[in-house]
Image (cartoon, rainbow, N blue to C red):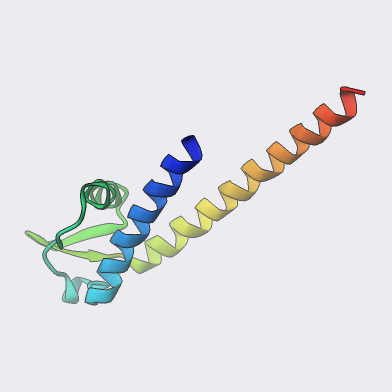
Length: 99
């Protein structure tokens, strides 16, 4: 069940990021009002704002800070690989020591 929740959250985040990209709101000069999002995507937009990935250019007009998103996504991939490596090592260690 936990993996399903993570997948739902990741999909909502992707929808939110894609909405900014599709509307062209990727620079302060092209900032736009927030779109209508489903409830899960709205939460992700607010998280993205708090993380500084979506920024307010002027009151009520937001844009996606692509350079920060690039750095954030790279960091997330790196973290995922580290977690995967640790799980693999733990599994290997368990298999070796359980004999």
